[in-house]
Image (cartoon, rainbow, N blue to C red; front, side, top):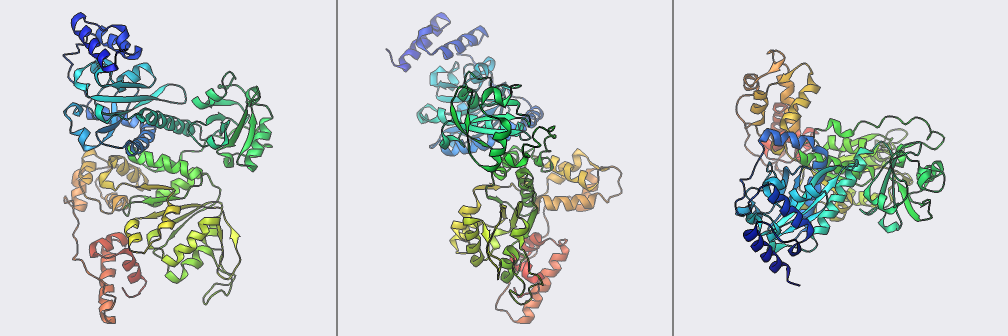
Length: 626
């Protein structure tokens, strides 16, 4: 048999001579696609100009697909790291072939044939001929289009690997594509793209059925938490609501579809299965033909014992993400990942500049975990060094001088069954880091002067410090970082987010629902640098809400209230001299206090204006030497 390249040469010759290719010189999928292109009247040598939607339509489509787009962007970043080498691009498109997002290296972006592969471009076969995105959208299944298999010669040096993403209802929710130049083609790319598509599909499945009982199962226990596990959503009566693709494969031939009962598919009583699932992480499950599975109820905590299982199912809880504006798909992806990690009790580390919403994201994690306990926040930088351990782990009466009568349970105990949020974790003393590390080994605490006790907490940490630099300087333990960041996310500064308008309107609605922001006012606000991020924007909007200009704030009101400039005055940087005499310390402290008052009691802004650390500001406020 002729090699593939020779067969394609023959196909192109026949196309040029006779107007159509012979069927035997290429795969059936590529041949059928070429024939569709010919039927559409496309000329392989005269491709039409690329087509793009305008920016407003693109934004509308991006918002319409916000959930799947957020999940896709998370997988796209992972894919880009997995596919080694250069000249690669990862893209996400709608089911119709409208490209919404792409991630590429500079070598691919600079290529002339990649100029039209950008957000807003349309990749249907009727416009771009045979191509990964368009052909996968038509076929509704994965496809590889390599080199000269593209109908238009302008794409003949590209290899495109595309896979559809299916929503829980079976409809195509989007298309994922990895493209490279033919020389950079990698054999494992197709498998990685397929895995990423499955991961997105499972994310959509879990999101749609977050208020239902979700059963994961596989015939091999080691695969229970992998992409090959089956997922089955059922209601409190044991009625099947949906099954993912893996579940349908594992239960082939059995009626595992919506409307049937758990007992129609599996042996044993549903109520017994749910009760055992609340007591044990894993259990055995046998289907109606005798196949054995290992199963787990992923969200068993949120469901009652069987004496209440048959009661009417309450409405699914409101998504905790609703209060966290996430129209920017990068933020939407973070919101989704945090929710999944919180439900699995994974330690979460949130990085980001001050004011970017780290505590709000931590509260989102707490809500998504559906834990019954409290959300307890502690600022590690604001606690006196000598009392951090006692505040976190508690103490008994008389354990040290000044200990309150009756002692204290400690913040970890207060958060038992809930979430402990450690803000400014980078400022935790190294000695206490060792204690925290021991806690993460066995989840037990020892109060000062007391005995050990076990607690159950979701641990969320946050910092705006460079922990890698702190590790290099010996101020932070690398082994602790590895225990805190099972999931690590970084919140974007406000100036880099694409949903500024959504955030501004959301904040103003919370400040005063009767006041609206005009488009011009939002544009004027968006021009500012916002070093204090969302926190600073909230303060400015609160000030604007006091303007007596009627129910709509316009650009003129913004200029009158805060000025047209985008930069704040910056005080000369000072160095807090620790060896200075007491009177100089008082002068330095007075400067900190004055700046603190000028910035509206904003610690981060004070630190930036003076060029000092937040810790130094805290010490000045407590009356300690710099």
